[in-house]
Amino acid sequence: MIKFSDKETKFLETLEEARIATSHENISHVKPVSFIFWKDLILVATDYKTRTFSNIKLNANTSIVIDIYKSGNHKAICIQGKSEIVEKGLEFREFYDIFYRKFQWVRKDPWKENEAPFLKIIPNNKVSWGLD
Image (cartoon, rainbow, N blue to C red; front, side, top):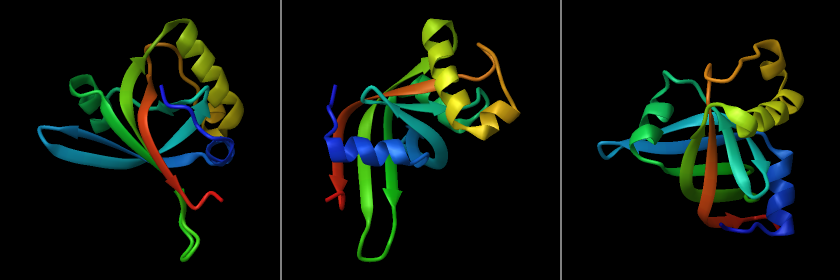
């Protein structure tokens, strides 16, 4: 697993929106998501009926970009890795508690195990820029 620098970690811990890329039949799919950076992993909540979920079931390769765009001062991390689906159990409850504490939308519309899964993205490559 990839390790993140202190600057990358601080950057990832301060943001909550990213764009995730998955694919099916050589067709790419990108969408905005809420994420949490936790123990050098990226956690994303999704739903069973999304294209992202169905893509991950067929192809675990995932990319995610977390960035702040300001002309002349762009900051970003692009991460590639494998996604694992977490639907229940201790790991699910741990991820859910983290999301519940961070996001008001989770507290407003809570869910239980097997109602909506998490994606655990295990990075195997990364590139960052503008974090100096």
